[in-house]
Image (cartoon, rainbow, N blue to C red; front, side):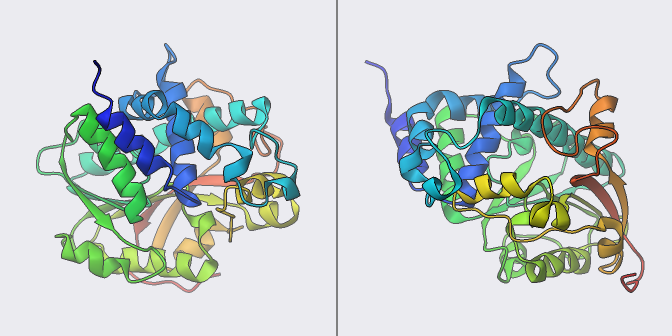
Length: 314
């Protein structure tokens, strides 16, 4: 008889996920879909395993019964229609590869300390070719970390770097928890905040990027996704924001000038339009606002370098 104990543990953890934790599973689903393509931009076997082994529990999580206020935003059995789901998978693939490249470039420049904020189901510790002596920290809520640990334990996979998980609330003093786990303040560090900022209020986002700068040494890098505040409020992302809120994980903030905002917190930013990034990977983004070359941008992929001095916001 097959041993289903690992699968059962994953399922039990899945049913405890709520809010932003559910979106982490949704991202794993998108990465699993990309991993099945012959022309895939990356290969994420952990994401594939999450979908394959936790399919019944994921179906329950995505059903109307598990979505608070679903009826208020017109959600039926599925929170997204097929076109929206396809657009999400396409964008998630481009975003994932973009940040893969950001971290790889940082390590090629000598970085050996990496921090992934709100790591979710991120499998980069297991799938990227990290240089020797790289130490990677994954910060997230305890239930999200427990879900992923059950999965990687069941799979028997090992990280390709020194990996440390840190249970932390990113709206509280997460820096203390990070230091307690061995983080070396003042070292060359690569930070990643992928799909995080919009779930935090503006005050917490300001604190997050300022704290990352304070903890970082010269040459440190911050990679992040920024969603337009105006697009969420009354623009083309308003309907998407309502759908996401049905998971119990509403978008709480956005930024309309990423470079100016980051400059005020000590980071020099390069701001990339996802449409242009996709073309560079031989892909086209379709079916979501901001995808076309003539559309107003609704979100950006950003790579920032720690500035030598703080500059006032414009």
